[in-house]
Structure formats: structure tokens, C-alpha cells
Picture 1: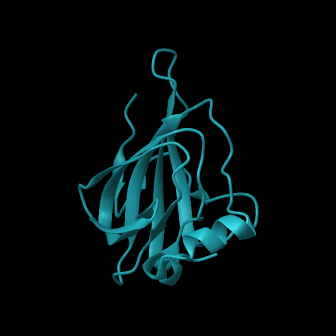
Picture 2: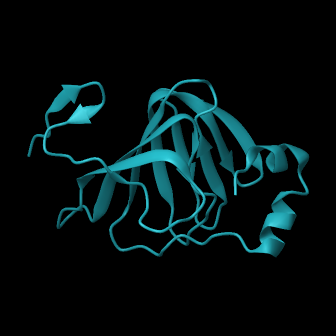
Picture 3: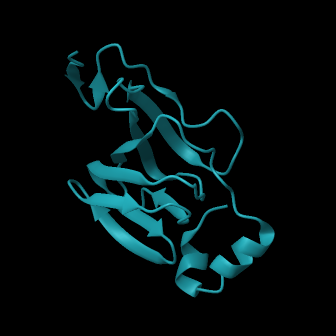
Length: 145
């Protein structure tokens, strides 16, 4: 199957979806789903795009992620470290690792994300977990919750 790129980070027959259906803490982010998995590759391939000054949810999961920065630049929280991210960077997010992406450089931040089709739901931080994360001043300044 071919999914034709239409330019300007848009693809034929791939609708722009809400990032999440519930009202968790995120800002100016959309989602597209390219694949719901194949019989021999049970992975979902998604494209997320964060507008300038937007961010994804602060969360962790029991499953791992593979992320490829596809557009722009920004920053990513992985565990207790903040990394600048740029086009073509590849990020692996181990299970149970806090993560959040932010478009902090005045440009869009778009990334492909590969996860198992059969996976757990996001775990949001409790107040105690937030307090632990906020013990690191850099992380406290970075996270949006």
C-alpha cells in the first residue's frame, strides 16, 4: 500500500485526528495514523505534530516507543533528562520512562512514533510522582502538567 505525501506534512487519505480523546494536559498537538499493524508486523505507525509552544502529555507506559523526529526541532524529556531534538534524530523510549515532547524553538515539531498495536494505556503522574520529578530544577522548569 502506498500513502502518497501531498506536501506540507499532509498525506492522502490520512485524516488529522485529535491527539487524545480525553482532556489530559497537552497543547497544540495532532495525530495521524499510517498503519494499524499488519499480521506479521503488529505495530502502529503514527505521526504527531506539535505546533510552536505546544507539548505532548507527560506520561509513561509499560511498552516501549521508537520515535523519529521528522520535522523541525524542540526538546524531549526522557526520564530525568532533557534533550534537544532535531530532524532525523532517533529516540528510543524504554518502558516506564517518563516522557514529554515540546516544540520550544518557534517551529513545528513533527515525529513518527512506532508502538505495538496491543499496548497499555498511558500512565499519568500522581502528585507524589510529580513531586519526585520536580526535585530536579531543570525537569521542573520543563514539564507542563
